[in-house]
Amino acid sequence: MEPENEIMSAYTIVFDHLVNLGPGDSATTRKLVERLCQDLSSGPRVADFGCGVGASALVLAQCLPTARVLALDSHAPFIARLKAAASVRGLEERISAVVGDMADPPPLDGVKGEFDLIWSESAIYSIGRANAFAWWRPLLNPNGWLVFSDIVWQHEPAARSDMASTFWVREYPDITTAAGVVDELAAAGFNTIDPVLSTRKAWSNYYEPLRERLRLLKKCEDNSQALISLIAELEREIDVYDCAGDDVTLYFFLARQDYIPE
Image 1 (tube, helix red, strand yellow):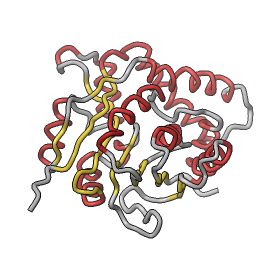
Image 2 (tube, rainbow, N blue to C red; image 1 turned 90 degrees about the vertical axis):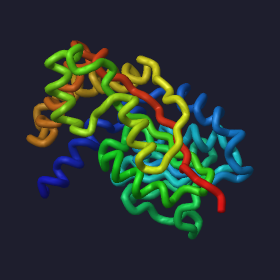
Image 3 (tube, one colour; image 1 turned 30 degrees about the vertical axis):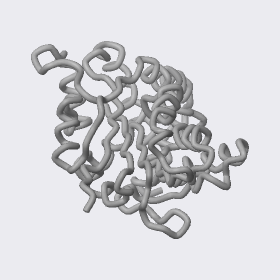
Image 4 (tube, one colour; image 1 turned 180 degrees about the vertical axis):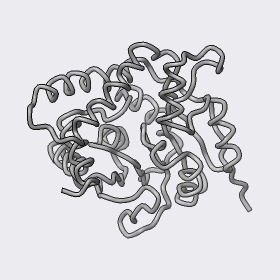
């Protein structure tokens, strides 16, 4: 098996059957979607970029019963799980779950872009905020919303632990404060409302099932080297969460284009 395929296979094994592939809380997702309902059209076009197995895409479709949702992820096994979950819930006609690139998303119902809402939870880091803002802004309707969650520093540099600083600067070089993200959005042509702090439950929803999954996998004797390395990497991240979890937090950012009608 090619090295890249071995890595992707390892990710599939680790996250097989897990619901949250990153920090998240469906209750927070639901509250934010309901908050935006009145600002969306009667038949909104919605995109969920980096959807994973579809935790947020399913909430979006359920909270917006007239919406068409493009759920996009680069990992085919995750999309397969989302399709199955959408079918069980009777949402397969309204969720278009596809394998694709967040940098160049496919059309929805034959139309490129023109989204009323672009949503992305715990995924924007993978392409970088600056890239995401540049690529996604043209896909929004003039009054469309961009909503994403991102990990940010909770403390100023002097108050951060060495453990958290070393880990997060290496793993996420673009990490900044919530105010820093708001400034980046403004520079990219977005107006924002106050960011929304996620609950600590968002972290435990991710790390506790993952911790148990890693414990079970370590008992296996035939793990590939790629899987062994991934387990060790994820265990280091959990150690940082256990010892220095308060140094970072998760915010949702809600923004609209800085649009001036002609």
